[in-house]
Image (cartoon, rainbow, N blue to C red; front, side, top):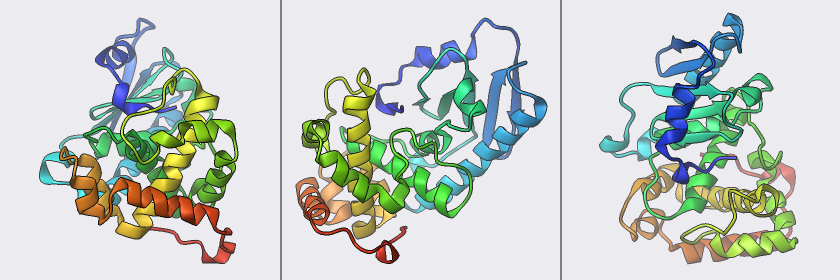
Length: 264
């Protein structure tokens, strides 16, 4: 589960200074990996460092056209692997991942890389998490690496159908008021299945709808802008208008699989 907007510095400090012995570091072109010595073999650590470095490059190539100069990466993205956490987090340019998820190839490293490269401002958690979900699936499906599938195995191909299923549940209807709106539903961290799961699925689906209609660069510009009016200005419609067209599309019969679009 990823909740980048509520990450606090002590998570990173704790991961950096956990008292379980020495920590090793691997530096590549775009990423630096830190991990507890003995938790991974040299080959395993090198393989994940390369995976992370490739992920930074692939995500950066997609989001760079929409990023203002101040938001573009300077230096390496730091990936910290820790046994002291069970939920992946991002703070600034530092990504903290549970060792167990990395070993099992279930770490949402691409999702967190999006958070590290696209510094979200404002109160649009749905767009922040939706874009990270969307690009995680897009890179894994069309470039390289893997999708952690934390909340759904739908990927971009079937996320709208997953959203339709979520909207047929009480939990999906309960979180819907926060999808395409400011703020976040209560208990999103505490209740992963009842709150976070439908919220992430619906946010992913709505974000895909906006990206396919307005373009990825416009969505990135809207997310990093502090101006409350930036979303409508950059995407051409208000959040309410996008939400209405998305819900109308979900209410229509699902298109044949061959007609589903892959974007950007």
